Length: 95
Image 1 (cartoon, one colour):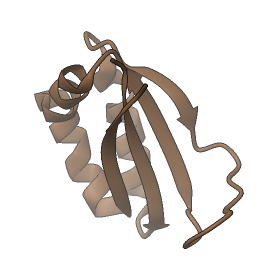
Image 2 (image 1 turned 120 degrees about the vertical axis):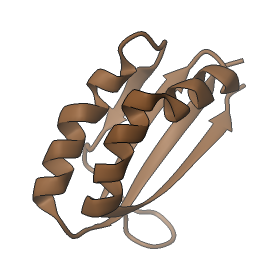
Image 3 (image 1 turned 180 degrees about the vertical axis):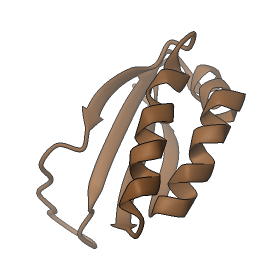
């Protein structure tokens, strides 16, 4: 069953760190079956707090999503994301 990792950017505080994060995060998908479905496109907030950005990546299952997130390459990139912005990140199982 498919799974999705969703990144919701709440606020950015270091654009340079985020640029470095972007340069590392994309390539970290190499060797993993992740497929980006949404990448910082326009957002229309219907309920709740305004989001500053959103990324959604599809994986074949929860284990594949967790494997990418825990991978050394993404963990290295994640450090830069923590420096650059505040996010909510979750994995959800598809139908």
